Every structure is written in structure tokens, then in C-alpha cells.
Image 1 (cartoon, one colour):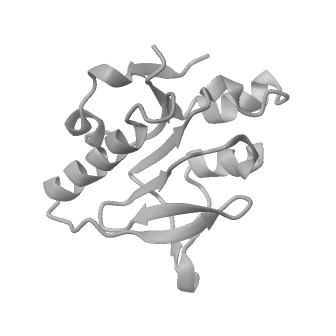
Image 2: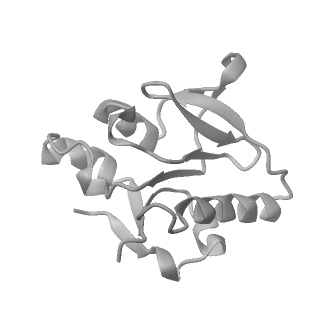
Length: 147
């Protein structure tokens, strides 16, 4: 696996806000995954003098995500195994296809994509072959609250 793993307990929103990345924030329920994601968003908004407002978009099989337009961040909170296909996840993390928000607006080229999940990244889509799995894992930095 080529993914970089970051200890969730020893990282700061300020440090994570500086990079153009895809973050998979994994850990048990109630540990602070969403809080870290919102701290990153708040820090990036404050740094760029932006307001903390978001738009909703539909992703995959009807799951709602949040787009923070002014800071160019997308947040998928509570990612579950059945919410999308492997191809849809690859398109999201490779930042290639625009996401449609309500009222038909499209957004793409996000600076930061954050996916919060109780699932470890290696647990999703277990039947996908290594070569295909590598297509999304190469883009993702894992922030791990399990270790």
C-alpha cells in the first residue's frame, strides 16, 4: 500500500489545511473524526477570510455530501460501504468529475476532499482487485483514529 498514514491523535487542522489532498479519516464512532474535519474546514475558511457555509450535493447512491464552495473543500461524513461503487469513489478522489449540487450547479477541482468513516480504508470494497484498489489508495492520506 502506498498510502500515507497519519495518526489522528497527533495532527492539527492547520497542518492539514496547507496541503491539496484527499483525507480518509477513519476511527470508531464518537472519536472525533467529524470534529477534525470541521476544524480543518474552519481553519481553512479563517485563513482565507471565508464564511463557513456549505451546499449539499448528492453522491453515489443518493448520499449527501457537503461542498464548502469558498474554501473549495468537499466533506463526505459517515461514508458507508454501500454508498457508492468503486468507480464512483475513484472519480471522487481523483477529482476528475464535477459534483452536482442542488439547483444543478457543478463543482470540481477541490483543494481538499475529506471522507470520514468508521470503516478502515482497507475494509471497503473487499472484492476489488489490488490494481483497481490502488487507483484510489494512491490519492488518499489516511488519518487513523484506530491506532
